Amino acid sequence: MIVTTRLYRDGRLERSDFAFDEVSELRRDETVTVWVDLQDPDDDTLHQIARELDLHPLAVEDVIAEHERAKLNRYPTHLFLTLYALAAPDDENDELERSEIDVFVTRNVLVSVRRGEGFPIDDAHAAWENQPELLATGVAALMWAITDVVVDTHFATVQSLDERIEGLEDELFAAQPNTARIQRSAYRLHKHLVTLRRLALPTREIVSGMINRTQPPVPQPLLPYFADVYDHTLRVSDWTDSLRDLASTIIDTNLTSQGNRMNLVMKKLTSWAAIIAVPTLITGFFGMNVVFPLMQTWQGALVATVLMVATSVGLYVQFKRRDWL
Image 1 (spheres, rainbow, N blue to C red):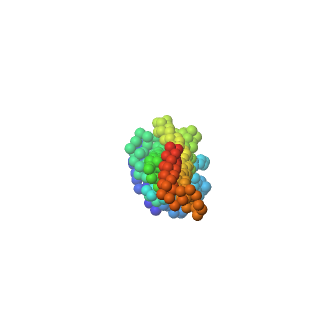
Image 2 (image 1 turned 90 degrees about the vertical axis):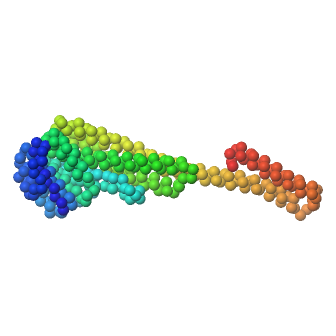
């Protein structure tokens, strides 16, 4: 377990790396903002910090259970957030990379709980410390920075998936497309987009709830920043829906193209079979074991040859005109 603690006053760092059992005392000072970050905490640590800050047991249970849906819950003493940072996998056969972060937000203390090192907490940390005028507004600035980093990962993920879909579109209409690979890749991308939408879409409602229903309300200087994050969530949602429809279209188009190519092959094979069948009919006629004019004469051989050549050429020209060959 890794514990990070920082105390800010008037937007400036005053203390760091203090024991989190001091938080219950520090929270009484309304002039400070405290951040506690827990990476891979055990259950006893979570229960201890819950006692220190009067956190609701249901929220602590959600942290212990993991893999909860993205949400914003309000309890009498605090807010509870579950968010997911996302990343497109390097290998399309792998699952969409996700990193859960749970956040407890009290009047002047924010506690973030992470599993592993997937969540870019350093980016959020840098964002709020680089803007002391925002950090001076209180714990809402920390909440904004973490949410902004989460939405940025959603944006980067959907952009990466968009580039992969564009590559599939180019491959789909290539001269000799690998239909099996296109079908497999399009299906995997569609699955990634479904997962992205399931995890990113609730973030829109979470940010909206922060702006409109947080008590105490978001400080006025932070409202444009939360509005910017909300705008990004809308763009991610709309972009994801568009790409999901496009991935489905690629799958359908690929199947249709396969059917069209098979029909073209069958059409050409049928046309060549017809061209071959007519000379076979003529040779079969002249090869009958019955007496008929021109039998066993050079004139008969000439007539048979001319008929075979003429009918074959005639059929070829007709099929070519009709685009059957």
